[in-house]
Structures are given as structure tokens and as C-alpha cells.
Length: 433
Image (cartoon, rainbow, N blue to C red; front, side):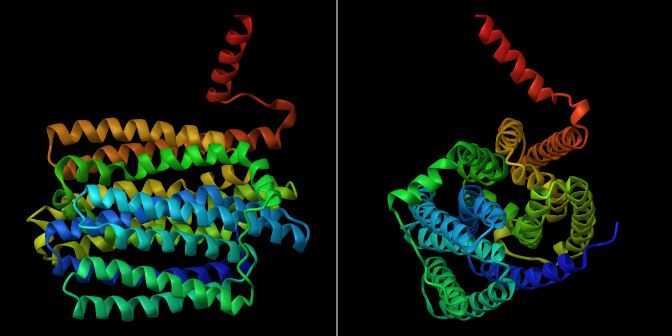
């Protein structure tokens, strides 16, 4: 199948913005890796992990639903109404994540945690706004905002590292200020007034969607357990210093997560529109095509990083075998990139419950294996448990999306998935009682 030209152009534009941010975060991590102690870098890495948790909740509860329902709206009034409802919810989620991050960081040894909380809250809010503007087809404005964030972040973080005594806290404040500046540029260029409303119509609009969003919230929780349990378990059991070598290698693969978000922002509105027009064959073909592209890209990127790893020297690595850690990290990221597209398709079909059950299974597998490996082996081996968890999610995601597509394309030959058969059997047994 030929790559859709307009999607390729949008992807290049989006990845340009994502690449700027990714490059900035990468450079900042490398600078702090050589400056901070293992304890300090471990705390910085945990702060970034909490940022990832915030982004996942924003994505599940506000950004993805906003992108889907704004794309499905047939008039500007409907688009604006959903924009206000989900924007208000995003502000609430961002504030809760800021408070939660401050508490977690304080428990793990950060003297205050407030700086990290400010960073996570502003990053989460800007992430939602970027997705909302993507849904409005304003990719150029988002890219300019990304450039503004990157320049401001580089200048402020550089000054923080150069002048401040407590580099960790000051860098977190600098990142929070850069995210606020990015939000300001985004709103200013779009010439739109930020509208936040807690009125009854707004609350009703969000509440009407809650039956689906509650499963999305559950899915976000299980996704965070499945995706971030490695960092939290290692830091909680062995301490932030033990997590530092893993974080130092994982951060080199952060661009893959950024690129995957660009793919989601690019394809989700387009696939939602195709699904609304019952063009399921095109949806299925594009999902498989982009999955192959992302899978090969992840393998190629991982091979390149394996050449770079031996050149990295830092006290935070504590003489760990970075090549060994790198192989396990590749085994984690390749499945992640391969299940992005089936998950997007399940979300635009509104199958948040299936996504929740998939991530719940992955979380259970990951928690059990990581806890066992931490008890019997050194922390790097915990990456093997995380990799098995990601492979579980990969297999389950493709199984269920293939089953859903088959039923849509063959309405006269529908059959239940294993999960559907199990649920029907449980319901029948309950009815008999």
C-alpha cells in the first residue's frame, strides 16, 4: 500500500516539533547525568517518569477523547463545546498530577518535591493543548510553540545548571517555566481565548461520556502500572541510586516515545474520520502499514544506540553493564512501537474496556515478574520482566483489533473473542442463579 501523502507531510511537521523537544530533553539528561550524583540523577529520572504518568492520564482522560470527539463533530459549535469540556478536565488532571508528583518525590528523598510537581503539571497541560490543536488541524502553530518551548527550556535550564547551587530543583522550575511559555505562544498564535468552565452544561457534557472514559481512566491506571512499575519498583525497593543506571540507558530511547506520540497525533483524527465513514478496510490497512514502519524504525534506532552506549561514562552508571541493559531496553521498546496502532484503532472504536483489560493483564504480568527478578537478581534483570509484559500487550492488542475488524467487515459471520465468550458465560451463569 502507498503511504498517504498528506499524512506523510503532517508526520514530518509533527516529528519536527517532537524532535526539537526530544533533542532538548536528551541533551538535558546527558548534562545532568554527568553533573548529578547517582541519587540526584535517580530523582530527576523519577520526576521524568511521573511526567510520563501525567501524560498518560491526560492522554486517556482528555487528549485522546478530545481528538476523537472534536474530529467527529460536524460543526464549529460542537468542536468548541468539546474543547472547553476536555480543556477544563485537563486542568483538573494536571493539578492533581502536580500534587501527586510532589508527594511521591518527597517520599523518595526529594527535599521539597514542589519543583517536580510544577514541572509535571505544566507539561501535562501543554500536552493536552497540543493534541487539541492537532485536532483543529493547526499543526504549524503547534510546531512553532514546540520551538518556543525548546528555546526557552534550553536557555533557562542552561542558566539553572550554570548559576544555581541546587541544580536539580532549579532545572525542574526551569522546565515548568518553559512549558508555560510554550502554552502562552500556542494560545497567542492561535488567537484563541482559553476557556475554562465548571458550569453545569460543561459538567453534563463530560459526564455523558464518563461511561466510556471511566474505562479509559482504568486503562490509564493499568497502563501506568504496566509501563512505569519498573521505575517505581526499582526506586522503591532498591532506591533511586539503583534506578540511575537503568534510567541513563532508558533516556536514550526516549525519542521513540516522542515519535510514537507524533504518530498517534497524526493518525488518530484521520482514522476517526475514516471510521465515521465506515471505511474500515482503509483504517485496517493504514494501521498495519504504520505499525511496520514504527517497528522497523525502533529496531534501527536500537541498533544505533548500541554503538553509542560504550562511549557513555558517568558516576551515575556505577560500573553497570550498559550493553546488557541496552539489549533488554530494545526488547521493551520494539513491542511498544508495534502495538501503538492497534491501540489507536481500539480507542477510536470506543473499545476502552478492551484496552483496559489488555493493560491490566500486562500490569499483572509485569508486576509479578519484576518483583520476582528484583528478589533473586540485580536490578538490570528487572527489564526482562518488563519486556515480557510489553510482549503480552502486543499480542493481545493485535488479537482483539483483528477480531473487531473481522466482525465489522463480516457482519453475517461474527464470532466472539475469548474475552467476549468469557464475559457472556459469566453473565449467563449469573442470570441462572
